[in-house]
Figure 1 (cartoon, rainbow, N blue to C red):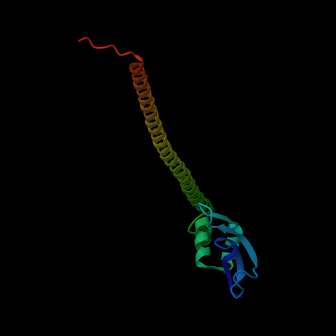
Figure 2: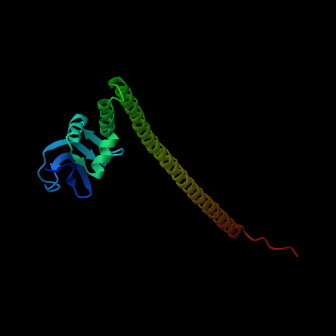
Figure 3: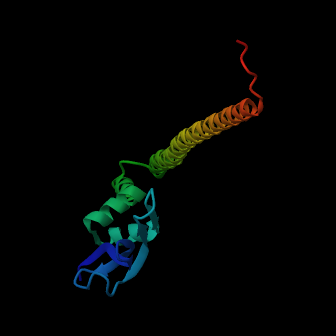
Length: 188
């Protein structure tokens, strides 16, 4: 029986996540499987990988063949490195302490990379929010300036209208006063 470590698709259309399973190679993709090793969610950033490394290592040691994507996930989680180090121990090229030291160094480096990526994503999101806030402040300032200019023009128009009305009223009063004054005969 040819055994494969592969992905089993779950989730909605355009929003898939995957179970990492050990299955007979003749079984349908989403069908019967022997054992579930973990899950993989590519929808998050960075992608979420939950994997039982001990079970995966056991299946690799008994001959299960990972598919290309499953191999990449196993490599990312360090299962293939662990298998490589165990092979070195079996051949006598390494001691258990040396293998554990290499494993721990690799694990620390990988965790640092993941933390740096998450910090970079948080920083990028904060920078985008800051840029959006600055753009919004600029737009609001332009709108406030336009409203102030419009209000100033309206006040100027009202002042001119009031001046014209006052001038017209003064002219009207002057004309009425001129009509009201008696005419004096001119001396000859």
